[in-house]
Amino acid sequence: MTHVDLGVKQIAAEFLFVLCKERVDSLLKYTGYGNAAGLLAARGLLAGGRGDNWYSEDEDTDTEEYKNAKPNINLITGHLEEPMPNPIDEMTEEQKEYEAMKLVNMLDKLSREELLKPMGLKPDGTITPLEEALNQYSVIEETSSDTD
Image (cartoon, rainbow, N blue to C red):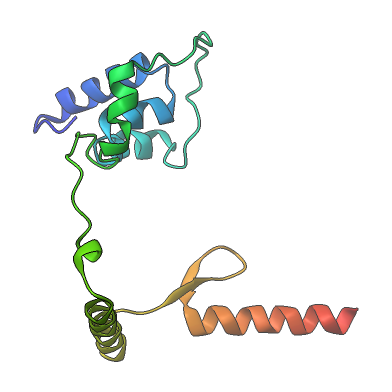
């Protein structure tokens, strides 16, 4: 699904999708989201669901090996990864607080330089800067309270 030849990539993706009975969740389970994204976008299935064809309702046959490995599978790449130690477990409370403040300062700097801009959803579902989204919701609440 990552081959440089577009034809090979499309045929491989379609073949794997059919083997998964055109079930998005099965395709993602075996290939990872990153590999399946192109096919799913082309079919309009990025939000999940099923293809148009009908397949038998056989149950998913997860092997015991897969069930044991499932928590360590990277959902984007589909690769099995070794669990990484949590670096926070080895920190003192002072170190955790210091790192948290560093993160707050970095986010504040990015926000002030407008490299990072908080976004929100308008009532129609489109993305807009957070201030505009909040203003629109307050206008909607005011008009709904006026009609009550």
